[in-house]
Image (tube, rainbow, N blue to C red; front, top):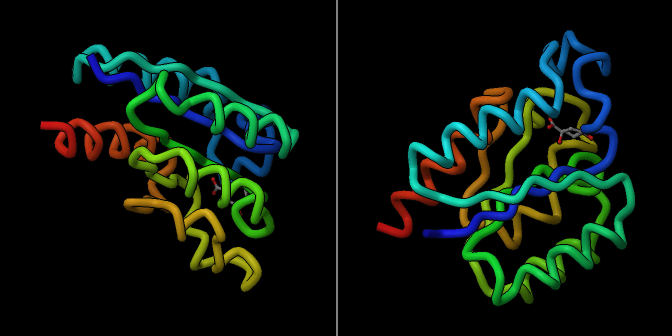
Length: 144
Ligand code: DQA
């Protein structure tokens, strides 16, 4: 069974009440439940993680090596700022799928660039919760 680490960055713990006109009304727990259901269907094991702290995200990525087969990450605001998370992903030596709930290219200019994309096999944005499920499906076919 493939093991997938799903990482969520800052403020994603506020989903449900945070700018629902942009991010929808579902909570991170709802997204986790949908990911768990999809993982069972795809015969994957997932671990779901959220942190508001950049260094914690770096540490979790470092520890993934040897334990997980792939990473799905919504780095949230750190996408646009974090060379540290990019470097951790470049060193982790496994496929990385970057996910954003919103279409970052339709939004503020500073959201158009993501450092993390430089380490990603693929990027999915604009499909809300569905983006996480598409990322798991992409990895399932990648490992076939
Ligand atoms: C986000 C987009 C980022 O620009 C923003 O800072 C977030 C969430 C998304 O999922 O659409 O916190 O990553």
